[in-house]
Image (cartoon, rainbow, N blue to C red):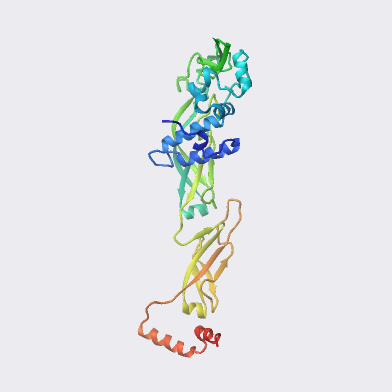
Length: 364
């Protein structure tokens, strides 16, 4: 089955910038991460996204792919004829005549690991006041014994004798056109540039330990859906002794039965009777901080909004919102005999000044 175009996999157009590639990768990685997406195809899609990012985020691999497509990355990314991949005419010319062209050497120094993403759902009130949530993660952490070197002691780490610490080796092949020279990862040290004579007994030379850890994740008060909490060094492990990437937790806030958040403000609809709206009253209005007394003036209309200062959400930056109370006047659907008599008397007393009579007079 033919591979999909890497740009298409990340939802990009050819010629996309490094920043666009990085943003697109983060978006797709979150979308298809198996911890978030439970679809049967999510894992395959996630691997496909990682493969596309690995190529397009590497300047040399990207140049090779842009010119030759998937074929240029065959044989472990070596390009055509076993080379590292051609970046242009100068590389091809130099390769035929043994010059090596403008090929870049990949650094074998410490590299930070990839960031990871997950989602966490919290209650509405927890988002308002904050909380500490416990999460369990499977993480590759630096070995506490060898501190990531993979060796029993410092003296057990030697410079690779084959590549002399560069992590790369040059090979030559004679052809009808001359000597063909290419660069590849050193097969002795796998690109690390070093050899270990005696491996660490705890991590067996890996330099890291896979652990199941429990973390206290502090959710700040005032956080909103879509915002992220960053946990340093809990992403994928780094390379060559580099630090782990970070873990980003996207917060999803559940809806409340009555409160609706609008930025830092909170909105709520409060039902009152037509009589209370007409003659006025005082009610206890719910807020996230408890009930607050609110005076309803006589003659209040349906849909009127009243403001309770500083009863909204206090944002992460310390900005305090307000609560807006929308008055919902409810008309009774059933009346007992006594109520019907009273309403009839009231109607007779105000018949000439009823809203409908005023409406009719406007047409005369």
